[in-house]
Image (tube, rainbow, N blue to C red; front, side):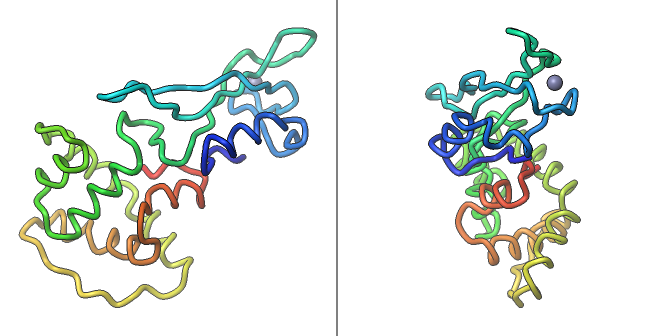
Length: 187
Ligand SMILES: [Zn+2]
């Protein structure tokens, strides 16, 4: 089922025509798409403002419908479902790492946050997805031969060549693009 959308406009068009999409939507809790209705926008509290992150569908048990009463999230593709920061911040963080910035610098520039402890959580999450990223890269043909600049960190030397390939194949905001193409969270 389509979960990530290019823009709020595309998401609005989707939820305005749910009956048209009825055969391709289903509730993640009860598996039925029959009773899903649009349930308004969802927001995230970022450091500067509330940002629309998507919408929710409601599996409605009201007005004669027999849904399970749970909600189902739909996201604008620059949203990271499990993070406060957007997928744009993740792309910036990785791009800076690829340009030989330190982990601390990359995190600071990407998030404007001085405390970089969270950057190591991001690296953990990225590591867990490495096999998935590699499979995704291969699905777009042979990898580019790219000269990778070795780093002192063993960890980055495992992680960055794959992220470099991902960035070469899908330059600019590759985390947003991957969410759109795979309909799955970047990590
Ligand atoms: Zn349901």
